[in-house]
Image (spheres, rainbow, N blue to C red):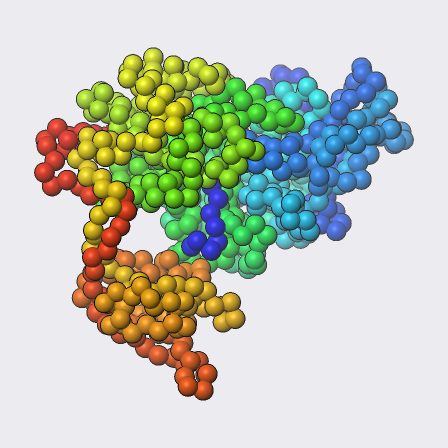
Amino acid sequence: MLKKSLTALAFAALLHFPLLAQNQAEPTYRFSIDLGKVVDDKLQVTLLTPDFKEDEVLYHLPKMVPGTYAVYDFGKFVSAFKALDKKGKALPVERLDQNTWKIKKAKKLARLEYLVDDTWDTPKKEDIVFEPAATDIEAGKVFLINTHGFFGYFANRTKEPYQITINKPQEFYGATALRTTNSTPTADTYLLQNYNDLVDAPMLYSRPDTAMLKVGNADVLISTYAAGGGDRSKNLAQNIRTILEAQKNYLGGTLPVDKYAFLIYIDNKQNRTGAYGALEHSYSSVYYFPEMPPAMLAEQVRNIAAHEFFHIVTPLNIHSEEIGNFDFSNPKMSKHLWLYEGVTEYFAHHVQVNQRLIELPDFLGELRSKIIASQQQYNDALAFTELSLGALDKHEKEYGNVYQKGALIGMALDIRLRELSGGKYGIRNLMKDLSQTYGKDKSFKDEELFDKITALTFPEVRDFFARYVEGTERLPYAELFKKVGITYQPSGIQKRVSLGKPTIGYDQASGHLMVASVENLNAFGKQLGWKAGDQIWQINGEDLNLRNATELLNKHVVNGKEGSPIKVTVGRKDASGTVKPIELTANLVASDETVSHLLTPDPNATPEQLALRQAWLYSNL
């Protein structure tokens, strides 16, 4: 799962998903929901139950699901729970906790019925679910069916087959990574091997806005719902094709899946979590974004997809017993978030320099940002295995470091492996070997992984894990980067183009970014003529707002050429207090700035360092 802060910034085809063999036993669970029967943003779920020999049985909805790293208690959104016999007579039911119902006289049980509420509309702040993991029920418009929010399981029976029938309006299309076993204009039926596969298969039902891509051996579906209207999928498909092709090449020319689905929801109103991002699944991923300009939206989808798509490697083919045998009622964390999220995040950036989509300075800039974040926003001295095990409770506030230091652990291990192998073996080779050792249906034991990696690679790697992942030592950046001819300076001077370093704030009343202070202006800022209170309206004639500020600043300033003209239109109060437009103009000037954690290629790097850098950055799998 990748979450970002908002302020920090029709061809329809069903896809394949592993199905039961045709001669396998009939499904234990037969669920159905009717998207045409919504009442108060609630949908009724009906389950035709198997026969029970017990007098009492427990029915659960999950407390948590893989990938979320948060306890959501999806049972809290269930109401009007009924257990019925074959004649429709109610059986006694006791609700034991938020996620568990005890059904008495279970030998007579024939059917369960209950209502599921839309999590996006929950009135309680403590009940809010990050949108890509949530459920959205909007009659006649859209249904985000994260299956873990609708369908449950009987105690000790998560390994048995499921049949899911979605009754739908005729004009609706069900976008999912599943293949239907039966489909009509008004109903889709799916068959799954077990509950793990079910929660791994979200669905997005709406009027179709889809596009298809062929990436190597894989068919990729992009399906979008935009609350504000308009078709988006074809444009998004064109923009993410490049990164998907790069990822395919990065993984050796083929992908470990033959089909994949991107399910994308674009909202036109303020959301409850104040964040956007995505939740990964083995064969699909769910994305939630606010409305934004097309180019910015495409960039955000492309950047986040670079991370989420790599989850086809882990945990699909590499996972611990805590994931492979996930306990939905009493979840246990693996200590290897450095692998699941950290290495995945590292790959998302490394693929771009490896496949020549970005240049070395851009890649080093990403690494620098992660070093800064890991040391300034999180406890860099906390052992990463301890962080992972406590990510749900004790170290919940440190979880975000999996995308910072976790990625840096992946980088450090990659460099170390390249060094030990003379450039011939890196972390991608390791992931391939681990995939072949384990695979989708075989889990590793949490406590054995470091020793297994050591056995597959080099004895020195065990010391790396002991010191920097299990231990509390900080990663030795200067030593690591020196191996590949990169100079690391905890503090250094760098020439940078900027707007002159005004302190930027946000003017709630006008909805504009504003200059909160001019105390730190450099010479260029003074030349431009900033004044405290200026509302920033335009840069080079383009309207600037909270959502596109980063895009425009990168376009016109950060990536601008020194000496090129810049024109900033601000709103400034005159003597009478009336806000009037003022144009600030100057030619861009690069100024010396003191920056932390500076990374620069060493002009005096030895041939051995340059060779290792080449292997680290540009080698093929």
